[in-house]
Length: 401
Ligand SMILES: [Zn+2]
Image: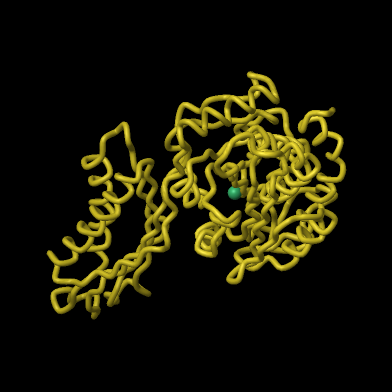
């Protein structure tokens, strides 16, 4: 009998066709009605699935029950596999024949590959369900790109979709640059940064630029905060558990001779341990409020919903690395020396369920170092990553006893 990997390669033309269809019709955010309908249309031909649609977003949770008789008493393992489905507000600039048909929307982060790959895993496991010892939850998720769709799916019960809590969870992400095509990468422990975004308003009181003593000028105070922040980053944190704090936007006033009432700036924060994530946010909040108070000004600080640090469970990561090395060859899996400073909302799942997130190289060019990266309007993901992702995810569930 063909292995799951061999079968994935047989199904590749069909899976890739599905990926192209998704790529041509990208949707952004939490509501992806067309994408949801396309996935459901694919699932129609498969019997015995338990399908739950999201109430607050276009998510799909699918449960496939393994039919292999249990060898001993006790519940069957539940394995959760996740694929995100949303696109980005980017106008595609590739000349692919399946390029986006929607101006201002593009699958520039490869989530079309994830969706088709997860569907492929479902196909493969459905064909072999008589030999499947686990129950598998397939998490088709909208809104990964800063909409926190994973958290909504968790709130709507995806982790318990099989009737009990998942025992292990796995997800994949493709990369159009950086990694050689086809090679899997991961690491135990912190894999991707935790992220917070904070929006700071320094509230002074404006007036004429010639008479600052009659005002409370928020501009130098905001500047002081931005500079003092750098001292917190370098003086409060161990260099072996680093943090990043970047002000990406700062704004105040209208013209040179008017002191404005307020100044605003936006900060993105990255951290690689849950402890430092909390500490960084707390330290900066105290710093900004303290500087504001020193100058007699109030400071408003708003934070967006956070993305936790993506932390791979050491045991599950080793399991995944072992399965991938066995299926694809030892040289097809590389242990990453460092985490990456991007963020992922699969982190919410990994906070609740031990599991692993794995990177898959999908570069179409000769040189991953210079290829357009994820989120670029010219990002291009190799089609071969679709059956590869499908086989990897399927094997991670299939080999679970
Ligand atoms: Zn992504």
